[in-house]
Image 1: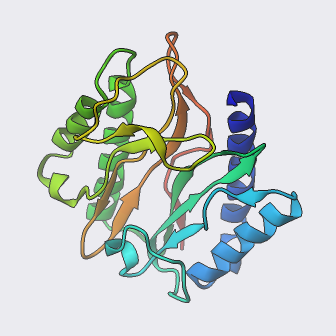
Image 2: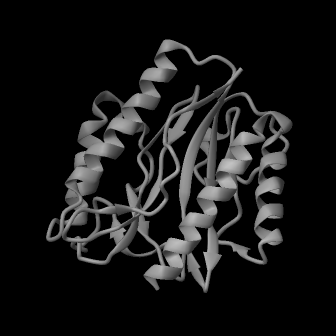
Length: 217
């Protein structure tokens, strides 16, 4: 199982990097989604879920379906593939244009919460506490964090363990999960997500693509 997930994560990172490298060729959300689906098909694989490309005012829809919205400002790229029936899940951010100070601060806050959540992810800790700490770390922005901190990944893209304030699950060795803090206001949305393997010697980030904000004027 873990080998298949690792391979799925490796391939998803490779395809997503190629997508970002070619981003100037895309005009709409659907352009990006179609590119990703085409690359997956070329490798004779399947998407773990429909590519989730979000721009414009679509950030208020957590499970938005990519459409002909033009790419402008923050763009969420949420993507994954299946290998041997097992899934991967990664989210990275692109910015079309020039971000202002508030937008950069917001991105950095999400990255900070992500890093702190990774530190909280220790065997024996309750997942509900990991989620709760993320909300505390968002400070005044916590009301804009509108979904759970993460979820288990395996043959299904969303499965146990649950990573939410309502979870009764405990962090255990060899759990494969996502950590995906996000903020969604009326003006913009930011999410950073990795697939992670929990182990006693330190957690392994399986989706190793650089998490920096890609700014494309």
